[in-house]
Structures are given as structure tokens and as C-alpha cells.
Length: 306
Image (cartoon, rainbow, N blue to C red; front, top):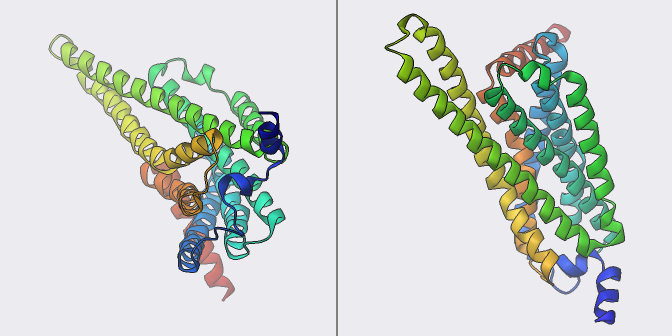
């Protein structure tokens, strides 16, 4: 048992995920996976850069929710700028252990921040729906900024486990993803129940207070739209991160050599960073208008220069 524990502490991440010298991925799969990551990387960089530029150029939409979106856009932008290029290089260069470890650490860090920020946004939406009268006092700019800073610091510190103990790092990463998904799930369930409760109240009061029905119905429709938005976000979170949770948990519980599955899972997690800006621009009208305005300004400036 002592020898096994010593092996666990001293083994590299490659020993637990894949021994690239002995079981390298098929060349065709590597090429296809890298080819898939390239357009995802470009979409990630362009989409998140536009979201950041739009929020910076539009002071009127800088609410606490938009500050969270800024953090999400920054972490997703780092995925496209740093994590994905390193991942592609590591896929193509199979014998560079330093590159592999740096790629894994940065990937876990930026994707971890992205997932935690998405979870924070789900909590924010829950507070907006459940405590809409006290939302402004509960969610302040200073509090949001402090929480975001703590998320970044916590995730960066946790990535250090990758150097100290890779086995433990995989297990903790699986737990980290599970906690985020559970919190998001609970928030979205409560949002759905709250919206349904408000809608039932309005229907019950419709005959008794006819004059207030229109205003109340508008509020319920706004809550319903928020619930639909959060449900769409939730579906993509689960689709992109649940496979990573499953594999990380398995890697943390035992010795596995699933190189193909791990590479696919990493690509799917990176895909979430490309989907996020598209998703939020699609579902958030104010952000979409700001992004469109920013794109028009950029194109107008480019045309004037030509």
C-alpha cells in the first residue's frame, strides 16, 4: 500500500490519463480533433472579444450581471488565446511533458473560471427572480467584483495541485465541476418553480383585480423569459461539462488510459467557450444590440481607413 501511495504522488498526469509513448492517439483522429479546435478557437476569440468591447463601449448596460459576463468573456477569451493553442500543440507534439503539463494547468484554470462564473450567473438570475424587490440591495457592483476576484484566485491556486499531486487534482476537478453543476441545477429548478408560482397567482387574481392584470402579466412574462433564458444556458452547461465530470471522476478513482475520450471531452469543454458569446447575444437583447452597434462601428472605422 505504501509503494502504491508513493507511485500515486510521483506519477505524472500522463500516467493517469494516457501514456503517450505507449498508446498514442491515431494520427487521423489527432488531425481531425485539431482541425475542429481551430475554427472553435477563432469563433471563441472573435465572439468574446466583441462581447467585451460591447460592454466596455456601452456604459448604460454595465450592471452587476454584465460584470459577470465580462469575467466570463475574459476567461473564455483566454481559452481561445492560450488554452486551445496549447492543447493543439500538445496533440501534435506527443513527447513534450512540459507542454502537456502547462496545457493541462492553463486549461483547467481558465475553464474552471468560466464554469464558476456561469454558476455565479445562475445564482444571480435566481436572486433576480426569487427576490426581485431586494435584488438591488443583494447584488451590488462591489460584491460581484469581490466574488469574481475570489473565483479567479481560488481557481488559479487549485491549478497548483496539478504540480503537487495529479491524481488528487483530477479528483478535486471532478468534485469542482459537480458542485458547480449541482448549484446551477438547484438555481434553475427554483427559478422554474418561482415563475410557475407567480403565474398561478396572476391567474387566480385576474378576476378579482382586473385593473392590475396587465401590469402583473407583464411582470410574469418577464420572469418567464428569464426562466427560458436560464434553461437554455443550463442545457449547454450540462452538455459541455458533464462528460468532463464523468471522466475526471473516473481518472480520480482509478488508473485509466482513455486518450481518445479525454481529447474529445477537452474539445467539448472548449466548445462551451465558443458557444457562450453566441448564446448570450442571442438571448440577451441589450447585449445583442450593443454587440451589433460595436460591429457597425468597427466596420465603419475600417471602411474610413480604406
